[in-house]
Length: 232
View 1 (cartoon, rainbow, N blue to C red):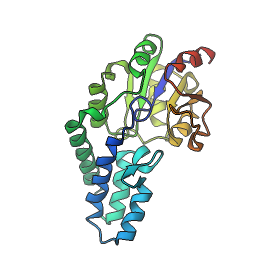
View 2 (cartoon, rainbow, N blue to C red):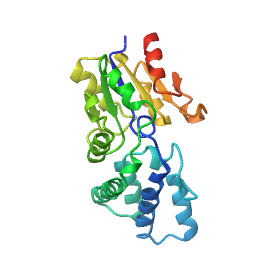
View 3 (cartoon, rainbow, N blue to C red):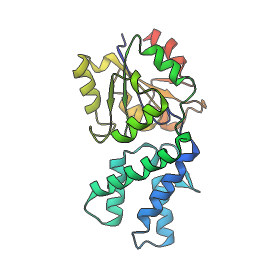
């Protein structure tokens, strides 16, 4: 019997709009300008980050990595030692962007209604590779913060797919990992979900992308969770 539902944030509950391409490009340019790399090398770095033709690609480092992991990447790229200063800079750039462009915070269809109904019968949790300050701000702006009984961020726990946040959730509510399911939209999420009773892939376009191949179940609409949960 499922007792807790754990959600990813970006791409699952919140839409990954093209507007997020802007801060990713700005961040990459900001740090690349502090290097001596050639134009060819800069282009290669952007591709490795997941920026192609000015757009962030799905399942890329910019789309799935925590801010701390991004900071580690740029710290190594620039040959600097203080990754925490880089992490702070990244957080400030992202926060400044969403405060100036609140329209980028968009819920996926049905997210509000589904969370509202599920919260009546299940423990709801959110585990994200985002930072606490950004996560709290975004969830509150989206109007879904209060639905969650447990929120874990990558500056408080090791980033997904490390199990620490799930174990903390289990300890807090006296659960086993088998009492949970995880709903996400990336390869990292599916590996993370494999630690629970079921990894549920949210794929609104129904493409069944190869990076979601490890999913136990697929949904194209968040409302489908109700029927699926009845079978588990």
